[in-house]
Length: 231
Ligand SMILES: [Zn+2]
Image (cartoon, rainbow, N blue to C red; front, side, top):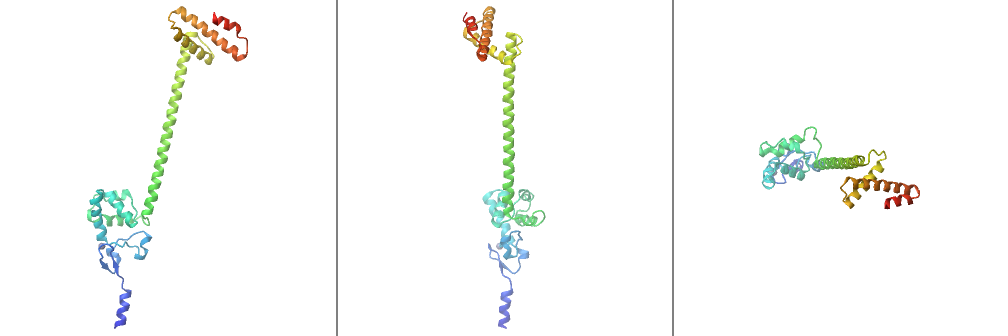
């Protein structure tokens, strides 16, 4: 009867692959199951048949020449979770079934329910972790450089003090010792003094310069010292 026929037509499912146009009445055998809510109206199955999805792999391999890029591209297209170590585990599998095998692995723990959105979040998180690690490494390097600089300065000061004590004997005040050494070097450089007698004169000048400096700092009279220095 005509009426029964019409009802049959309506209730029977018609599922079509978006790529090859193949028509069937059940997703289960010929369409890959996905985690994305985008395909809720397709009972959670992709609108592309397994055969077409698998063929996409070799089509994209011609373009990208890279297993990982191909799988990533397929995942992007269909909102499938992309995971590099999962992709790696299929590197040596039969090329004709890699995408469907990949999807089967996704339907197992711990990947159930994940989509490409999770890939984006995970990769952003990994990038942030890497940035923070690099930043703290840079800070550590800067700190080490600063420490080396301080060490270098300390070494220079130590050497100046040792030289000062060699020339002027033991001087307890380090600032005085450094002042004397500085004055001594300056006078020697300007006068080109080489003999022992000349060096002794310079030493006396340095002592007087130090006295003059201290007198000025304490506000005492500097007249007598200035006269001695001039002599
Ligand atoms: Zn198809």
